[in-house]
Every structure is written in structure tokens, then in C-alpha cells.
Length: 201
Image 1 (cartoon, rainbow, N blue to C red):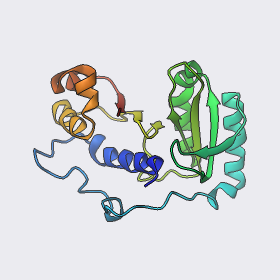
Image 2: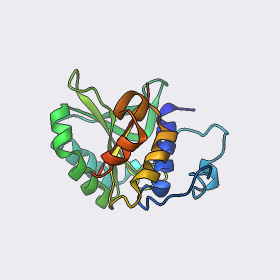
Image 3: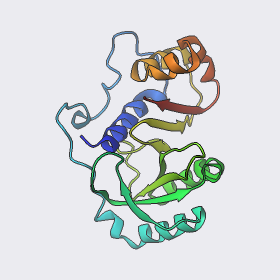
């Protein structure tokens, strides 16, 4: 399966409880509330937003995103598979610009019916890449950053049970503890803020 599509599905998994942050208990299925099509082990076709991308509203959004980011639109492509995501548009911008504007811009475009997200984070070594898609489907995207090796975003409500959520996050992405903060307890403490970040080697 396309790794970009995997990241999209992973973000849907995270959304299915992160806002509520309820302790589902040990050994329960954190994907239980997802639609069945996202729980299948069968390969999924890459997303196709071609028709939706033809709308005048999306075309205007592409122009607005280009002006905001100071970048020309390009096809949105996966890192490791040939071909573009149909209907997707990509922009390049310096990391400092992305950090400054992504959260607000993401919310603004979402309110218009479109999804702006970072899918390639290069930590200042080269420009970051952002994608824009004509969708607000939370089961296609829910985070401000989505790539084959990372997910990023923020919580829209306070985390009610940081310890339970930290356990779920560790099960989903051990690297954030094993190569990151060092323990699930420290991860839970970090959830006092509203930022969310995962990465995989």
C-alpha cells in the first residue's frame, strides 16, 4: 500500500479517541470505532480527489495557499511510490515559515472545506513540503502533518487521561518513547500541552 495512504489511515486511527482521551483499558482494540473499511488488511487504492479538485473553490484555495506560502503549486507525490495523488497539490516553504503559520492556516483552509498539511519535514536542511487536498473527511486526514515517517498535530480539547493516552501512543509508535522521551510516564507528562508528534525510523 502507498505509504502516504498508510499515514492517512494511521491519522484516522489516532483520531478515533484522542479528542476524548478516555482510558479504553489494556488489551482493547483502539480501532474499534473506525469504519470497517479502514480495519481491513487488504491493500487500499490510493486516494483520488481528482473530481473535487476541479471545483472553482478549490482552485481559488490553491492560489491562496501559493500566495500564503510564497510557492508555486506542484503535484502531490508520495515519497516512495511513483505517481501523484490525484487532485492533490504540493507547496514548498521554509521550516520557520511553516512553523509560524501552519496551525492557523490549517484551520482556515479546513473551514473552507480543504485540508492543508505538512507531509515532508526537513528540519531546515531543505524546504518543507505541504499538501493541499479538497477534503475535510476526518477518516482521510485529521492532522496538520502527515508523511510516511511522521504524524503531527495538536489536540483540540484538553487531554482528560494523559496516562491512558500515553500508553496508546506508545503502542502505536514506540520510537517516541524508546528513542525520545525515555518513558511512558514522561510522555504522559508531555501531554500537558496540546502538541502531538509521532515519528518512525
